[in-house]
Image (cartoon, rainbow, N blue to C red):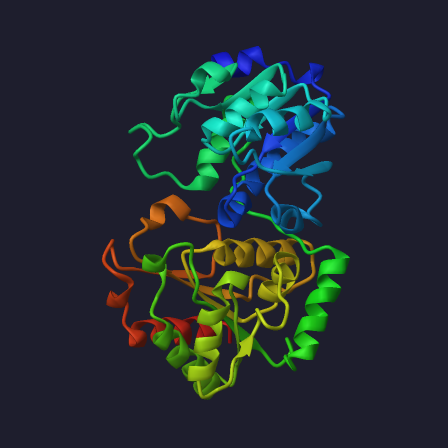
Length: 353
């Protein structure tokens, strides 16, 4: 048994703080660990408190993985001190830090939480009571899926943490909002629709917009699918340019008022998602799998075609059975030909019967 596992007395804990990653995709890939913590907490009457940036509370709402959610981030020079004081009122006995952030480690230490668990990175080991080594044999630079990176913390602490399935569920309010968005846009899930997600956090991770427009027309003309184009509000110009360029007149989900909560439901009911390496990929996979497991869908009908360029796909491997990855092996995204993506979509849709 590791030193960390031996030093943690689960029976003595009443409130556990979990510091969530900032990125949507990473937060979604943390849900297998949250589920393992939830299973452990239920047998011990332990309350799980999540600390996250704004928006992730909407993402995680409805899943039942956390008992409480605190929204905030230690921004600015006084951020760790200010947020540390806020977290003091949560009265947590221990904290698990999923991000590698130095500032978040300082925040938790300033909150006076007696047990602080996280990876020993960013020169922050002295602020943790349980500084953990890299879970990869080759060290910090060896690619390891984020799901396994987080689950390894649970295993170190003695949990049964081998289930890699992500899980997101729309709350009833989020489901109603999603249905209203689809209805206003004249989209029927029964008739079938596809979603294109052309944005990404960095421009070099984006497949060319004109190819997304051509793909929209291919899906509409060959498969009779209504095409929806998704993105964040700051990607509104990109989404609008694709919708204007495509002859098939795709639905602009940004203009339709999509948000993270309704997006869970909208993606889980789609037939196809074509996406760059971004959080929508993880939301769609997690929501579709949860819909299947909860009996709200016949199976993981959704097919996902994921496009990778400069990012090594090994960092973002997910447990989803109906995904096809297309990677340039580190080359620019322009190296992914339109015909290659069209064929991948055709094969995915044909397999659905």
